[in-house]
Image (cartoon, rainbow, N blue to C red; front, side, top):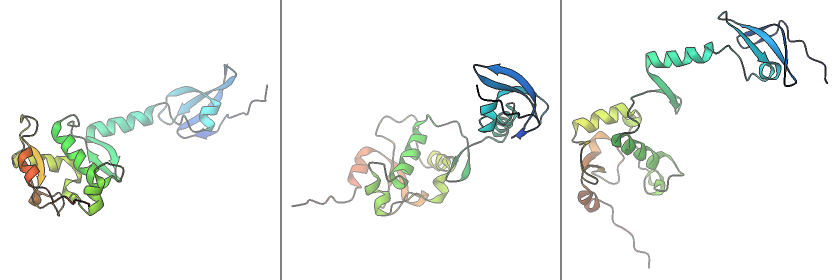
Length: 182
């Protein structure tokens, strides 16, 4: 059995090692004190690899901070507002618009982002898109195909001045001419 490296007095993240607490399954256990005052017993390999860096208070601070400020995940380096509407049809329309314009792996990218169609920076935030949609004819209770996002000019991007809510028939009539390869 290899000799135990004494970690007493070392600091790992917010944890300061106080003393050895025995072993479990061949791993050395250490009594640690967190900067917040709580005590935690940790495995030496978890401490040394930074797998554990606090008693859990750090994760709690982040979660509480996100709850109170209602801030959530990082997208393109910006903190975005959580809106609680990710399961709605309108959110899926917004997400699909972004994927078609910005994700080269999207199957429709060549017809949108690949030919220069982008969404305006105002619509990078779903809340702005939702507010525009609700005030410009979006009907959350519409049947399938009765309320779809359409660009008035197909050569311009997605922005409030160039978009409207229409049915599938209007969309079909408002598409660019198809090329026929001979």
